[in-house]
Amino acid sequence: MTHMNFAPLSRYRGRFAPTPSGPLHFGSLVAALGSYLDARAVGGEWRVRIEDIDPPRCPRGAADTILRQLEAFGLEWDGEVLWQHPRGGAYEDALERLKALGLAYPCSCSRKQWREYAIYPGWCRSGAGNASAPCAWRLRSDRGEHPARFDDRLLGTLAFDPTLLGDVVLKRKDALFAYQLAVVVDDAEQGMTDVVRGVDLLDNTPWQRQLQQALGYPRPSYLHLPLIVADNGQKLSKQNLAPRLADNDRGIRRQLFDALTALDQAPPAELARGTPREQLAWGTAHWSTARLATAPTRPAPQEA
Ligand code: GLU
Image (cartoon, rainbow, N blue to C red; front, side):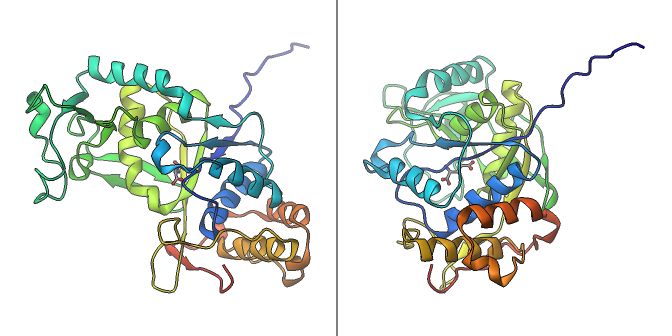
């Protein structure tokens, strides 16, 4: 009998990647839970990455609070947490490659100069208007796949014209790297096979797809989850002071149950009294993206 060696199929690896601008709220719990269940349901890995590339926006201690909150909700991650703040060298290398490919250019324009336009009109594409001024680095959105297409597991095949979204900033004038570049470099270097996150990030995906293509990175699969909105229809966010997640046992059980409900998983009523471990075990065993309705928003539960 001959024995054949099969290359292992690439194992699912997903992540929750919060920006530590404040503690997690109910909306972030739904994103964390959705990515966790999607990974665990197929025996995959689930990682946490702290996206702290913008220190002025990240109060001291917020990242640790987030990690403690994930633990309190039973959302245990695999491996070490990846922190973005010490990874400037990796982002700089990627930017250098984009520059060499003619896909990134320095831009001295201020927001004020182009305030009458919906997107940055690309004036510095042929050379920075004021090369001695501090410059940001922007992506040539016109030099890539048009339209940019990707499949979302919930929303189907989506096509965007990246030029209508504009030449996104990759590195800011204050020398901080921008989310778009950091997220793409880290997803690739960490071997992420699946990106599961809120639908508020959907219109960032075309730039990320363009960057993946330019840098020769593999394409992860995408699932954009519904967003939790407050009574006024606005997304729950740290900026509009969404309350932080519960930190007492009763509240944690309730909010985990509410998050399973917000993800359309229809948990049985008695599960609301279950421990986080019991609720996550049920959620993992029953996780079904087919149950997710395509409606882009869900109301926040009353107590959240
Ligand atoms: N750091 C981003 C946020 O907190 C999420 C990044 C992502 O999932 O791609 O909104």
